[in-house]
Image (cartoon, rainbow, N blue to C red):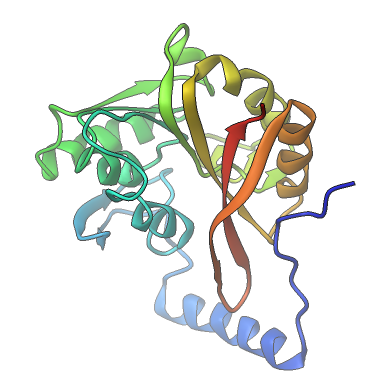
Length: 235
């Protein structure tokens, strides 16, 4: 059996205390109420966040994935799909390099929010946002690079906002449908977290479907470690 590539959290008393203090700080400053209208600056871009859309700066993972999207991983000809686009930050970061980017999200409010951010950053000619679940909005299309910052919790989402956090069978469906949407040399960047119970399922399902996984980037925060996996079709 292959060893897991997902970082595990081993919290000592100091890290546990720091995590609690961070939670108190977020509460006292109002940062825990991220589900609000906010204008952030992420990856050098102004990003408007509106209610029911996850804030990529406060939740950190969107900003971390967007920071990886430079000329080292894509070029002008790279066809990019941003799965679960949210505010659109990753799609827009990719669109600064690539000329064709499609972002999809199950939350129609997120699709509108991402469209606004494309206009704010004058990238509307390079990126298109579509509403729908996983690969449904891009049926029959293939991409050189698929980006996905998926829900970290397994379970039925309570509402559109919660769909960014929680999903019933996302890992299995993503893993079984991904190959049909990659070009011959295509790959995916999948962001997984030590928080929640879905990351191990994503890793297992992708390997079961014949994908080769490697660590592209990793970052440790006070209360979680996030790992970006490079997902490629096995030989």
